[in-house]
Image 1 (cartoon, rainbow, N blue to C red):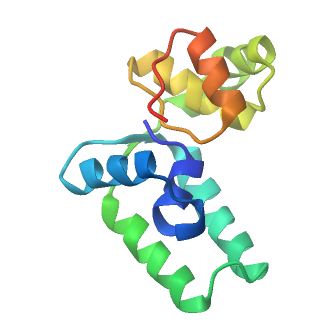
Image 2 (cartoon, rainbow, N blue to C red):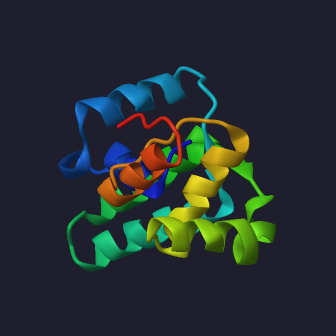
Length: 134
């Protein structure tokens, strides 16, 4: 499972890393990657914010949207029904935002590793027994 920080690293060179690039190569080769519905909104918002702050040029912004859309992630739509229950509980337990807890909940529920560049989320994932990729 891939969070929004990794998606941005895939399309904004200043955010990239060898590990993120390797994961992108796997996804481009057909490796399935899972995301919550929230992922689309978070990534779109990050790109808009980067463009507004002039951290990316217009052509980079447009290409990033195309490239990410072409990856076609598997979107899990079950998680939204757990927002007031399991997701909120995880946010409380691990001192996460509910937005970050969405990724942790999905990784736990679907028993998949988590790819995130967020240190707090990675620490919570490890404490919850979820394998992290970055």
